[in-house]
Length: 72
Image (tube, rainbow, N blue to C red):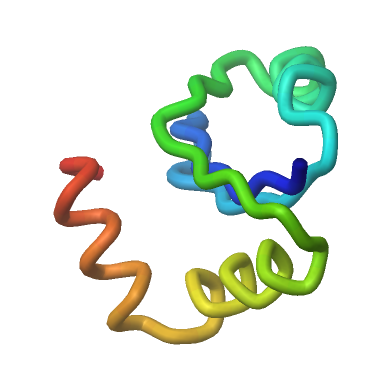
């Protein structure tokens, strides 16, 4: 599986991509004081997950809608 995720950190929301979500979240928590997983989506292909990550990072409308749903 491939994952796109959103973390709530001290610096603000963080959008990322990983094939091993649990391991990646652990890395974030070691690097930051606070890194809470608030949302993730699972995909069957690498291409779909990377497209979604870019969509959230590059297109304001997609990110605004998700942020509104998550109350961030």
